[in-house]
Image (tube, rainbow, N blue to C red; front, top):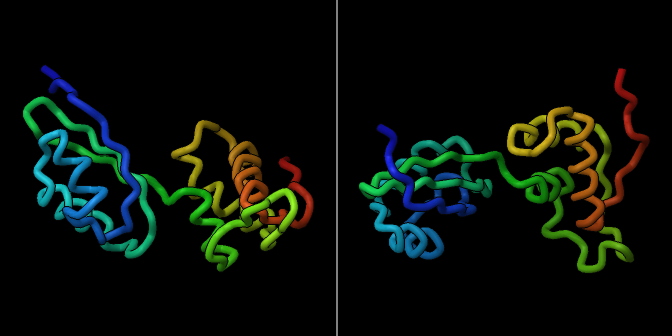
Length: 147
């Protein structure tokens, strides 16, 4: 028989840096999860991605056990890494802060497509380009034609 799910917790934690301080501790403690056990497992699973912001979805069961899924870094974080910027524009419609090419967008889309709600890389590229524009980045070049 399947375990009864008590709750889902969604957090964004830096890889290999989970610790019981906020936001991890209070979020897990309110559901009765063993915080140190989660931190040990998360840090072990993400030690190859130190410092990268990683979304994690934690499923909590009635017997206080848990499972978690680590997802790929958010598109906005990946765009900031590619452009080497600290943050996006405060006024993206007026002030452009950087440029990104379609090749860079394609690599991000191929990395992130498993967590997106689309099936084709072209669709994922358009979504990533939209995020780039909303951050004040200019998309250079022309959208590549698919064969």
